[in-house]
Length: 160
Image 1 (cartoon, rainbow, N blue to C red):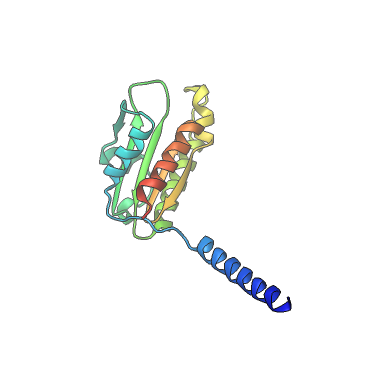
Image 2: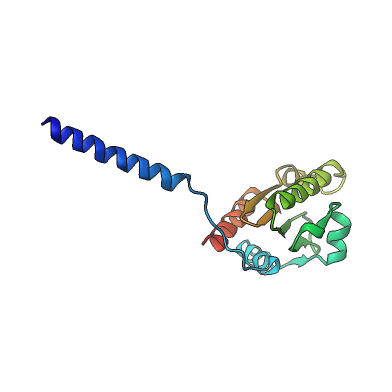
C-alpha cells in the first residue's frame, strides 16, 4: 500500500513538473511576413476594406520617433469616414524599440487630442493599445471588439 502511494505521488509530481514547464515556455512567432501582409490579414479580420494604407511620409511625420530602427512597418487608417480607426504593424529585430515607438505614438495621439473633434471617438483613443508578437508590434485604435479581433488574428497568424 505504501509503495503504491509513493509511486502515485512520484507520478503526480512528474505530471505537475511537465505541466509547469510547458505552460512557462513563451510562444514562438514567425518572422517571415511583411508588415503589409500582416496588416492585410488584420484589416480583413474586422472587415475594414475602407481603411487606407498610410504612405511613408505620413508615418515619418506622425510617428515622431526614430523609425530607422524598424525593419518594416505599415499603417492603415480611416480616411473616408467619421471615426479614428487605425491599425499599425511595426517590425523590428529588437521588439523593445518598436514597443517604445508604439507607446510614444499612442501617448502623443492621446496628449494632442482635440476635444471638439469626434468626441464620441475619444474612448477608442483612450483605450488604444499595442501588443508584441515576436518581432512584430501591433497597435490598434479601434473599438474593444475590433481590437480584440485584431490581436487574436495576429496571434493566430504569426504563431508557429
